[in-house]
Image 1 (spheres, one colour):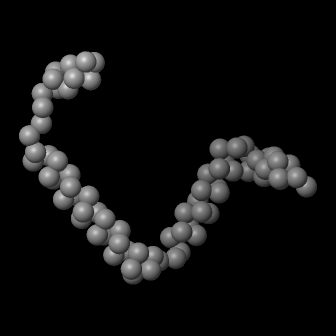
Image 2: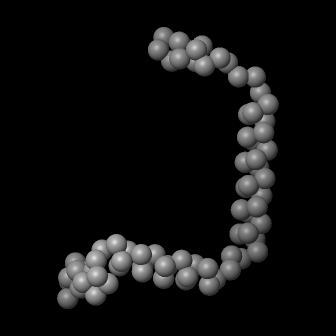
Length: 76
């Protein structure tokens, strides 16, 4: 059976495309949640979060031009 025929059959078995997509997304979510991230990957993500928050804090603390000036410079 061709891949498209398999999809059509699965759509019919699940009672519609939405139900099939939902079932597949639930299965995918469960498979991802069943496996923990390696500790080094978890640490990399946490470090990335901290770096991003620090960068955003620095951006927020820096002086900002007025929006009118930004628009004028954009169209100049």
